[in-house]
Every structure is written in C-alpha cells, then in structure tokens.
Length: 426
Ligand code: ATP
Ligand code: MG
Image (tube, rainbow, N blue to C red; front, side):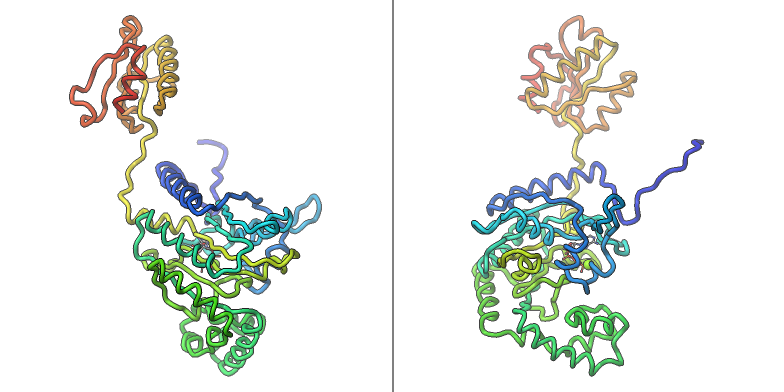
C-alpha cells in the first residue's frame, strides 16, 4: 500500500482517452475541412478573461453569469478573472482590441474547452468543448442563412439524422422594449403561479422567465405575448430574407416563438439545432445575431452573427449512428531479440516511417510470446521480427497478423527492401 492517497479528477470534468480520442480527432479533421470550404479562419483566444467582460457581454441576469462562472481573484494583482464560459465575448473583445474587422468583414472560428459550474449529468459537464463560428461585420440575412446552411452540410458530412432546426427572431431593441412591457404586465397578472426565480427575473430579464422548465408555469408561458408579434417591417423582412434562403437550400425549420437563448446579447435571428436522441440535453448547436455586442464592449458598432456547437453532445449523437471501429495504434509492430536486434529494429523502423508507415518498436523487456501479444493488442496488421537469425541473414521475418491481409501468413524480406515491400502491401 502506498502511503500517498489518490487525487481524483474534478466532478464534471472528463478525461478523454484512446480509443475515444480517435473519434475526436476524426471529428476535428472533418470540422476543419468543412470550415475551410466556407472560408472560415481559425482564431485562438485565452481561456482567462476579465470577469467584467462576461458580466457585460453575456448579461448580469443570465444563468451563466449568475451562477455558472468559474471566477477567482488573481492574488498577485487583485484582478477578478473568469475562465471563459463561451467564446463569443472573448472573440469580440479580441476583434476590437486588434482592429480585426474594421477594414473588412471576417469569417472566423475557434475550438476548445469552455467552463460552466453546472450540475453534471449526461450532456452537461463543467468543462466541455465548443466549435464556435462567427461572421463579423455582416448585416445579413444572407450570412445568417450561410451559417445555417453550412451546419446542415456538417450534419450530412457526419451522416447525422434526426436533428431539427428551430428558428426565432428577437427583433430590435425598441421592439423588445414594447414586448417587454406587455410581457411584464402578463407576468404580473400571474404573480401567484410564478416561482422564486421567475419573480426575481420578471423585471430584470422577463424574456428568460418564458424559458422556464417549471411545468406549473407552462400554461402561463404559452399564453404570454409573443415577441414575434411585436416585430416591425424591417425585422420581419430580415426574417423573411433568411427563410427564403433556407428554402432555396431545401432546409426545413419550425418557428419557435419561445426560443430566446440563454445570453442577453442576441437580436433578430436566433436558432437552435435539437435532437430527441440525447435525452434531456438535446440541443447540439445554438446561435444567433448580436449586432449590439461590439458597441456594448466598447468597440465601434458592427453587426455580427454566429453559433456554437457542443462537441460532447454532437459526438454522442454521431457515435450512436456509427459502428465505432477501433483505431489501430500503428500499422507495423517491430518484435526483436537482444540488444543488437533492438537497435536494428529501431533503424528499420525509421526507414518504414520515411515510407509513410506508422510503426511501433517494442520497448522494455519481454519474450516473443508477450511481444506478439502486444503486437496483436496494438491493432497492427503486420509484425516484423528481428532476432539472431534475421540479423545473421540480413532479412526480416514478416508475419501478417490478420489472415485477410495475406494468405501465407509469414515470409522473409531483405532489410533493404522491407520499406518498399510493406509500403506497397499495407
Ligand atoms: P443548455 O440550454 O443546454 O444549457 P445553453 O443555451 O446554455 O445550453 P449555449 O451557451 O448556447 O448553451 O452553448 C452552445 C452549446 O454548447 C449548446 O447547444 C450545447 O450543445 C453545449 N453545451 C452547453 N452547456 C453545456 C454543458 N454544460 N456541457 C456540455 N455541453 C454544453
Ligand atoms: Mg446552459
């Protein structure tokens, strides 16, 4: 027994190990190709930002800012810092700071971990990952449509079905203000059935009260005045402009007038892609337009629209529709005997890698039997043996580990021809 106790990982923060990491890498490769096909370029921003960026950018009265952020005071200089709970605020901060979009509009994306202190459950973690895509400097609705059409393409590339699009328009601030008045009146008229959270929010963020999951408040929420009914001609034209382009692309959606999304900064277009296959956490992607955010964060006003995909949920859905094939560690496993055998094997392995093959040289001790067990476990299709006989003759023994690869199982190949021979046949 060790005198030291184990240190466990944190609740809600997952380790991802092989073979699961192979799915992540496959997914990331598909995503990068897909983004490149639409001209979106990668940006990388820090995990830590000033707390006030998110408080202002996301909104004080939101789930994220009220209770989900990992914030702390930096002991060295007393600054209040927060681990990013989403990308958009940081991306806008960065674009303002580097004058990144004022010469021309930009299509960009970021990928990586975000942090929210939520109750962990399936599809809800405290560290999770997003693909975040933003089109900065475009008023739309053409670009709003582009983003949704490109998501439909990603679902096709991944072979995903059973994923549906919900759309809404949140209009512009004056329309929201008029709706808000009507909504607060409606909430006040139903004060007796509002829960504590709803009462607290009915004046600060009444739209979010409609987002409630409390069954006792559903009827009240259903009969509430709809923001969509308060939209003026321009907002409706923007929405119509989006709809015709989705129709052009053969994309179907449902208008969900209750869709408001969790963040404060949205206007006009908001959307979510939802599936029924993941239980309660069925939203795999959410996005919308946030034309006011640049100004709110101290920049020159600029229109913008974007979305974030939750990678854990999307992979969960993807792997349900895929036969998860184990990914081999390597193609060739080198088995050897003695010091000279190991050194020859290591040299040959470098030649095989020059020829583009993935090679593992057995390391550590072990007789042939245990080395072959490792070769099998590695998923390699061929084992190359370098023992005394092989060294003496200058020929490797090559064993095909999966019968389908070669009927005659075993052969010898001169060291000098090994790379070329294996490259041709694997
Ligand atoms: P939800 O309604 O599920 O809480 P949200 O509105 O808070 O979602 P967004 O801020 O829009 O989520 O984040 C974009 C996407 O990130 C979501 O659609 C979802 O797929 C994913 N996501 C959000 N929170 C989590 C989490 N705690 N764990 C894993 N994925 C998450
Ligand atoms: Mg949330």
